[in-house]
Length: 255
Image 1 (tube, rainbow, N blue to C red):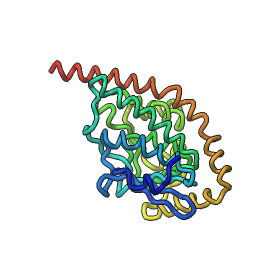
Image 2: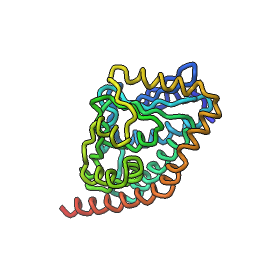
Image 3: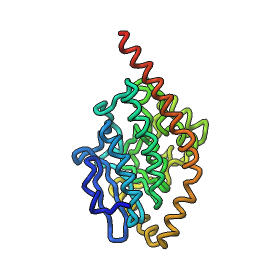
């Protein structure tokens, strides 16, 4: 069990604020601007979602980004894809971060404030998805690095958007705009950027007014299928990603 005062300032890439009603807002960032994802953030998010899920005073969670992008840029700092011990760390963190998100046993609202070109699986594990009009979904860095998209996007895009659509999205690095994402069932509402968080908090306060056990157990009931999918497939997908990373390393060494 964790308490907000003990972890609210513990995460350099997440600004945490909580209302008196228990609505926790998580704003991902890098030094106050849009998040630049790296290996340090990858490790940090495991502990972040664990702490949030372990705090009984959280009644609803809003997950959002900072500035004009939710998660668009990645840097290799802190990642080691190309040695067994380095990839073992990625493998363990990759499994835990998904399960720790699912272990947040209160409603989760994603307020997608702009482009999402990596780790969109975090959004797909939310219960309500709001998006600004300029939002674009894409799975870009996996194929840019020459590796399998096996970190959860392989499981959740076919599940949420439909098998054929989800596979095409990943194989072609398709750019999916907000309107098309709504047509696909990935987004619930498209909201002007300047009122996006207001709408997220409006919905969150409605949910926070439910009896605590009702809200908590509804989240659990609605995510059981996703939990089974992640539990059965995340380790295998990450292992395939690791094999492809080893081949990339071999090719780089041969040059």
